[in-house]
Length: 259
Image (cartoon, rainbow, N blue to C red; front, side, top):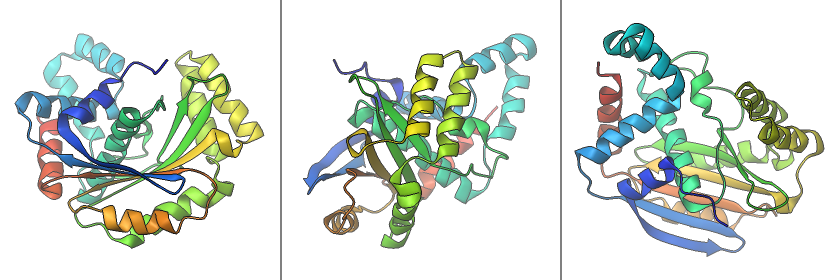
């Protein structure tokens, strides 16, 4: 039975329409294009960005102790100010939305809650998802890139990152996720990550994904990349095309930071 759609997956369907969904050899090419939506959807985008940085339970506790205004002021220090950091972070956030919309994979840990600073990124895999709908869990290792005009070079960089560690998720990333899950008392799910980190994953247990948040349609670049892909690990390339990439990011983070 397919898992219940997550709020992140449902949000993507409100923001964008599926423009292309094709196979290229053993790999997958998907393009979403932004569609018109109202203020209610924009508010849900802002909420999704906020929860990517802070657990909702933490926010509720702060609201009880500090009130709305002081909680909002405190949480502003979490949100990036640099354009590059905002762009990259939003790419990771929408990568999770796209993955959970398209597949049975789920991303149990939001990495942005553990950055070393508001304009800094964590080392390791951008996101790791797990599919527990089958007796044997499957994993997906992903990289995201964000740019107004995307070229082949950042995609090649993302692919190089996916190839590291023999294509497997990095051991540190797997333990990082497992540690956070154990802190949340999700021990059964944490164990799946720990066993995969210790024993490695077979080809049938692993997929790769490159997510692109862009202002240009990257279908030609993605098709060229996938048509020459020699890896036995199935690869998903997903592009969310925004009508005004830079303005979208600016407006979302202004709303996120607004007290």
